[in-house]
Length: 456
Ligand code: F0G
Image 1 (cartoon, rainbow, N blue to C red):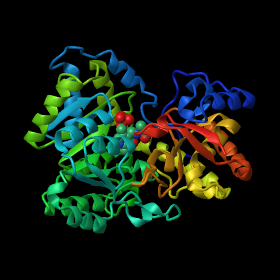
Image 2 (image 1 turned 60 degrees about the vertical axis):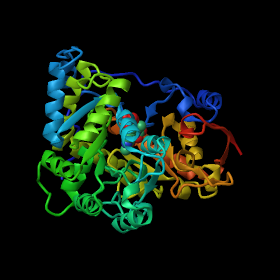
Image 3 (image 1 turned 135 degrees about the vertical axis):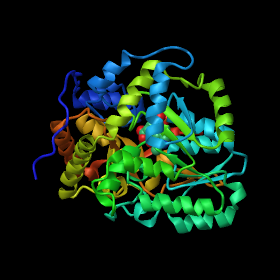
Image 4 (image 1 turned 90 degrees about the vertical axis):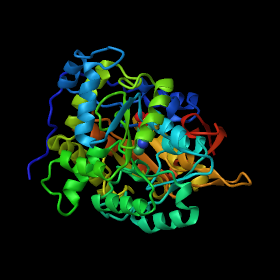
């Protein structure tokens, strides 16, 4: 088979600054050993997130110029509404400035103290928003999803048996909605099968519980379905996406991912009461419902970006880059999550840094090593991001200790990927020399963004 090439050429470039190792050691010390405090210009390859970091196409930049900045009922809103409706077929469509705004307003309008919300795996902002409104956010990921070595095709699937038990345990009246996150960001960017989305819907429906899809990476998930699920080969990605949304009662979305833009989100639903409550809070917090915290030009760029994300050649190229890096690392013995995720390559820090116990944060140790050795910035998805405390204040480790290398869309080229592989393999070979850390300062919620670390 021929090499899968980038289905675009580059019109505009940004310089990459590669500071020396000595400078990096100094910078990281000043950043309290937390890469969130580093300046972006000190990171040569910035894989902190795939969110809002992508490159827009010439068509998107051109569309910006068409932005209609009218406060209410702009032409740009009409375009946004019709694109989102075409893909999702929802009755009510609301723009928000990003994903967590949609989650926050949903939680604020639908959650009561003591409620429970199951999900395959909640993303951190989803969990935080639900818990802030008084709900318990529960993860019910399938067994394969917890096994970093299994190469099952849909490791993001919900465990339907556990979902049934969850409903029986808490009672349907305590569950205002169930969620499913596609792809499953916190569990390795692994996809959810159409069959599993359908089964989740059926289980929830049997108890009259609505299903809300966290749709940030719906286009990548659609691509995986087309590649891996019986009956979907050759089906246009938009039709797969339409079928996914047909099983949902509502969806939240961060357009900073598969909207291929730098800012934006949405909430969509069919229920009139949900829409009315959401709209009222949207006006209070984000803006009038036809712009929802975005500029008219953003709505234009989103309308183009959403359709570009559903382009098969784009998804083939995107997936090929992840597969390339995953394979290269795997062949060198580096513990990676298999198969590759949709937006990121995930390293298994528990296995990578075997000598560091979970509560000394092997993921942070690995991230800091990647920065020092190669000016690469990655993010921990493990005990710092998801650790919790029991009622006596003892810290509980997360099930998985992962390091995520999240790839901005259409930004890095093949030689950047080769460089990454070289640095990671070098760190792997020297892994024994890296130490665990302790936390010296932390916030009560979303501590990973701002906590300070000290080397053991
Ligand atoms: N849901 C999922 C699955 C996400 O991955 C994110 C963001 C959100 C919701 C919130 O969206 O950032 O627009 O408010 N994930 C980014 C990340 C931040 O790096 O994975 P947002």
